[in-house]
Image (cartoon, rainbow, N blue to C red; front, side):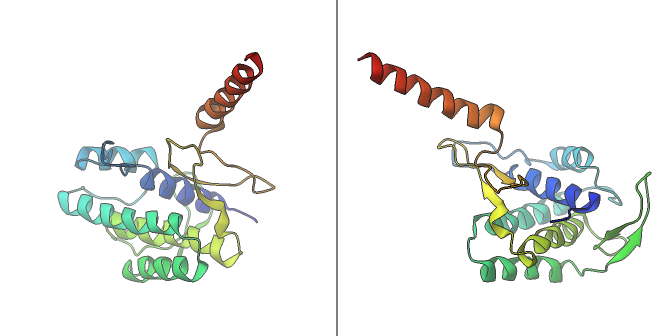
Amino acid sequence: MLITHDTRCALDAVVDLVNTAPEDDTAQDTLADVAALADFVRRNDISDVGVLSELDLSAVRKVRGKFARVFAESDARVASGLINELVAAAGTTPRLTDHDGYDWHVHYFAPGASVADHLAADCGMALAFFVVAGEQERLRRCEAPDCRRAFVDLSRNRSRRYCDSRTCGNRLHVAAYRARRKEAAG
């Protein structure tokens, strides 16, 4: 599956957005205020965003919840319905653009769109490409028991199981190794 630069950026942004939500009642929402939203926008190099407000924060949180449902959904029909809702509500307006040193690419949000509509349109279309290609299974949650972070499995053989193999994957492998050693010792 060919993933263009702008699609990859949108995938990275939607994963980052979904992962700002608290995983359970004990975790903290890392999209807690307008300053955190501004940091998210900077971190993901989201273009054409004006002055952010509490209304933007609220709208982005709603979009985040819908994207989280897409990552949790195994049924392509249900996921496609969620994506269709996001993209339609954003007033998707595809247009070619070349800005900030990037070559030609497609923006799906209308000029002057809110940050929530921007995310819904661009990120929704990036996820739509995966559903269309029959690759929805690549939209995953980490399999580590104490982590449910979202990620997109871009491995060649669709075998990635953890959000980060250096943390979650390695921690589980070390725990399994220690358990085997303990069992062998006695």
